[in-house]
Image 1 (cartoon, rainbow, N blue to C red):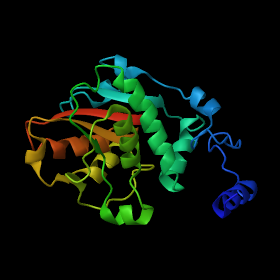
Image 2: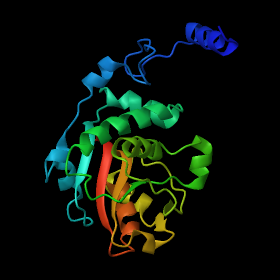
Image 3: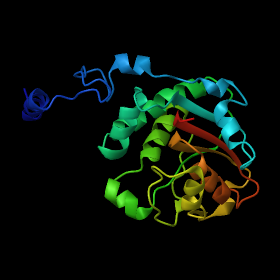
Length: 231
């Protein structure tokens, strides 16, 4: 038995890899989240339904093709601890896993048929250095693996480092994100259909601000996908 295997087994003995939703020890075949909790995820399946609640939330705020969310997000729900671990505890694999599961659902539908690029909501470089990764990019990675659609991470950028959106009202959230995004090369999205990806949609202010930046190219089409919805 190699030294690496011995060290891994000792690490698992003293620091077991547990599911962040239920704290049960993960089996070797389980990736970041146990199968029981994955089965309990409150999936919306709203990619099948035009005019779903997420689309109603964003209607009239910017032109879009479709909007879909993977699960309902609630403070006591299965998704909440997974998102927390993804964003704040370096559990990047959770974002990739959930993105992949969402992508498998979408790949069997017309939702992604015309998508040219997956575009994660960007972090400001300062925030990216602090966290070490962009959680939306991890979700995009999983979506890309499941759908084979390429990711674009260099064109849509965040140019202002704004405070967190937590505990802000709808109006405050919009003022907090207004004009904080930009496109480096608008022409790269000419006649392209992009899928804008984030972790959670609450008021939709961040997605709306991203869309306004994307629409600096008037010939871009936008769809939206998030892991969770809060209404």
